[in-house]
Length: 123
Image (cartoon, rainbow, N blue to C red):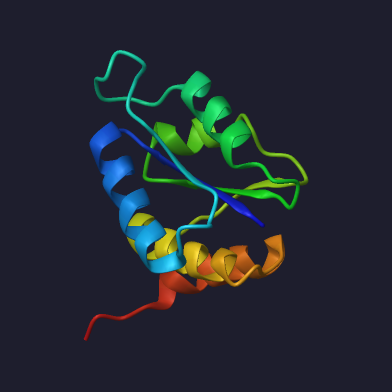
């Protein structure tokens, strides 16, 4: 199953979005929050992201969903063939990815589902 890592400048924001995505995508989805700096303040931590990737990696690939700015730069440190970045809205992309991963879709399909969230309209 594809793993998902949410990278935010805020630990509480990443944790809450991960909780919401897990509730909608299913409890079996490997999902981790890597938010904030290691001291609990605002920022992004490569060490927290590395630990989150290791936590969710089941061998089928990992999708990184950063919120903005330097979280994207942090995510780019980990890009490889099986670890990809989704350029998507943080909440909507996380939920779409979690639902697709919960259906045991392959990495390409989970990434496509997350990217489709860019076109979601509210009205």
